[in-house]
Image (cartoon, rainbow, N blue to C red; front, side, top):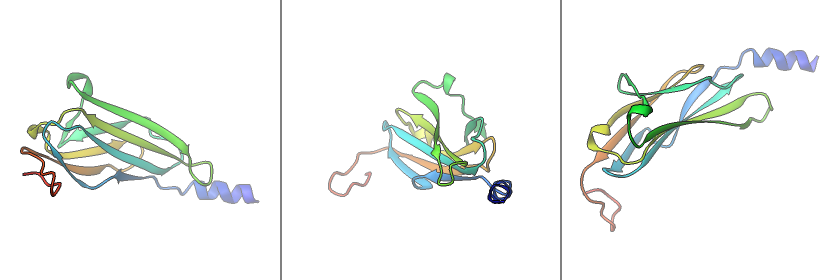
Length: 130
């Protein structure tokens, strides 16, 4: 009976996509940045995660210093549902890299993070960009 209830609960699992970190990210031009999203609550891990800059799909093969990574994590508390982390890694940001980035998993709704690349120098006293 318990097995039947567990299977019934699993059939209603709704995957969700969440950001790791702030939805607005500020970085100094030339800095590295890693944008991450996590897919939770999926019965199966996503077969892929596609990243978009605005409406344009990102093909890291054609961008030097850019790469994507997909990490399938350990089982969640019930041992059946897995979390998957998708990362977009930019080794050296430029002003033109500013904009909205969407993490779009194969089995979960997309989520967007805004990247703001700031020209200027970092103030060591305040930690702000001038």
